[in-house]
Image 1 (tube, rainbow, N blue to C red):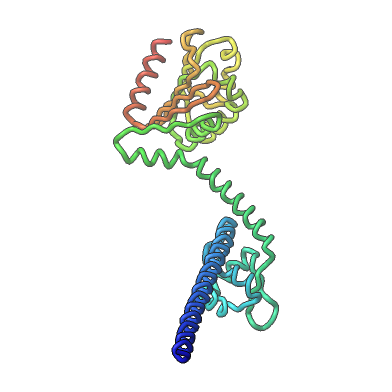
Image 2 (image 1 turned 180 degrees about the vertical axis):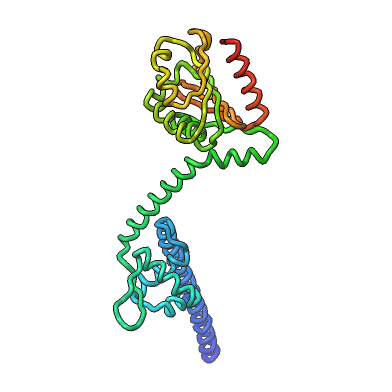
Length: 294
């Protein structure tokens, strides 16, 4: 009986120890996995921050490696990040140009990370560059829209809003270069200001664009549009309507294959129709109004 109990106790202790070891192994596995998840999340946050600053992912990995390990050669960085040596050299050179990696003085080519505060300067430069790019796109998108619709038979309509939308239409007139006809609204000067139209007139003359205009003959407009000013603004012909014949706060501009309707209201809306057929139709209507008003 004694020997039986002794053997049983050994077996029981062995099972206990085995279970204990299994539990320890499992806890170690869970803990390692937790550390891996935390580290991965930490690295993702770092890389995302660097991407927001304007770095590509390979550039960000190189910079993080320099932060973590101190000065490294491109060959060492290639091992740390999984990049080829050629790419590592190119990435280091690019980071050096951006000012966020510095060459360590000495015979051996080593790089070290610049202070992370330099990322704020990099992000600021990127923001300004994006603003410049947005401004360039904003100023030139009308020409791209014209090309888009010229290659298609179906008409298209572009809607713009506010004072910026009105200015875009006038910028498009200068870039298009075709002569134009427009039915002037008696409300345009009050909204955009006389100086805007005087400056636009000078640019129109410089672009060689001739304009035929139909205007309402109210006292203010008659007094403003002297023969000298007509010449200065490139108005080749102006037809006068009687006061009250046209009162809508909408100006119609016909040029090439586009027609724009500009509403001078509290919230201005600009509709630009790209269609050679509609433009020709409006041109014929313009002629009818012009002839009937003489």
